[in-house]
Amino acid sequence: MELNERQKTIMTLLEDPKAIITNRTVQKIFHISQITASRDLAKLTNLGLLFSHGKGRSVYYTKI
Image (cartoon, rainbow, N blue to C red):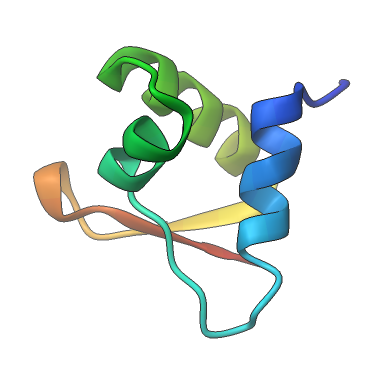
């Protein structure tokens, strides 16, 4: 499955092994809605590229 430009950029932002990203950060960087950010992060997680930590509003993602 092909990644869109936003998803590729999210992966680039997580190049640093200590880097984390949140839904809110994605919304602010790309000026997108919460649901769009959620879809991008969920897709990357389902593809095994990101790992989600936590539940609800405190969820953050790291690169696997």
